[in-house]
Image (tube, rainbow, N blue to C red; front, side, top):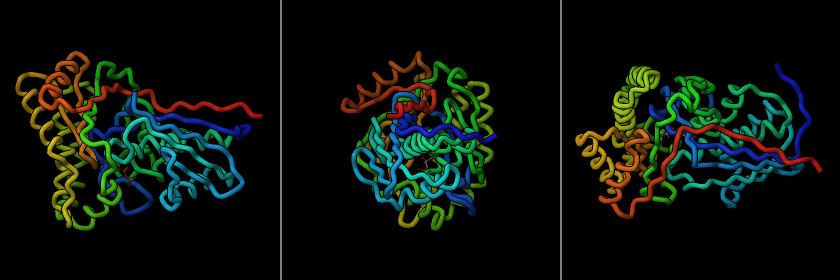
Length: 326
Ligand code: DP6
């Protein structure tokens, strides 16, 4: 059911990034950012993207961390927003409290915040699935970040779906290891396109992804961390095998990334329940339980003293605040 609400003047939405436990990597042949592979996401706490949107009569202006953005990157999203929300234009001031475009899924939280804020500003009612579909046009992974907790984005879908809230696994911790704060040279989107066009393994990756994803869903339902951790590793390492085999090859890893992967392997052999994943960037993200988090971080910092770590939990999803009208 659609209804029309009184439009607000300025709306601010805050969203956390969606970390993929199984990866969206590659585009479905039709539509904008419809995924070739299914993904399982967890929305994170602590890391935040904020989008503050205001109605304008002129050309829309979008800044991210105070830097004006080229509108061509945002045009498909703005066109879709006009289609589903009506013809009002808006300016957006977006900020991230964590490194941007560095492999920490800032585009997922950025477009989730933007879609949520633009929807509230428009005064139109959209379902969560419709907001997810709008966010997807900005960035595929943003389709997951409009929800709290755990989410699924099926292959070929136009929107992601919520699976469980944060209370499904309150003692799960996601530890982000910040290897490099700088932006990556090749965006996820460019990387996917290169892989899809040139890796001989891309087709096989897509065929394999469905089975892995189903196993991950079962492990998540059972809160089986060891099983989920093993599948999560297979998913990111198989994704990376398509990157290494692209032409020219894509290597997002840095020496510290490999050092962390090997160290975490050693911790598992010593009985600690910790598993890693990576995205299109050098950062490494770990999953473990609250009870093991301090030991994992202490051991990593002993090995790599300069390493910055951020501990997050399963997040509550976007929140919106509206400024009063003058
Ligand atoms: C490796 O969502 O950033 O983080 O849809 O082209 O904007 P576009 O790509 P994006 O890709 C995310 C890729 C990933 C895996 C994931 O988040 O599922």
